[in-house]
Image: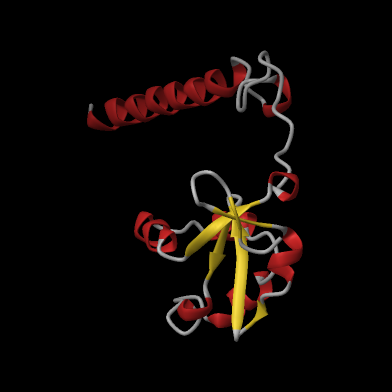
Length: 139
């Protein structure tokens, strides 16, 4: 199925297609379900070619995001996009939390009122203690 086209003339690749391109002569990977051919970028990559070779022929989204690439790097990557992954081969996204448990708010995340109240009380206590000692030493 390598290189099959859609109505938008965007090429669709399978994971099997990617696996055929995992060496320095032809290096493809999938980042955010887009197929990227980074063969010509190997020698230019600031992190070294080994980093790219480790991710060759498969999913590289997590590795790409873990590094924290700049906006410029993300723009540059668009130059190397050659198509998209077939819908059946797209990376599986983790299940979203229920609406009552948004990130950083649920009890498991410590998102209760004590998360901000305790540090606030410590800050107030430290300020009052500091002012007390400054006031008694000034007199």
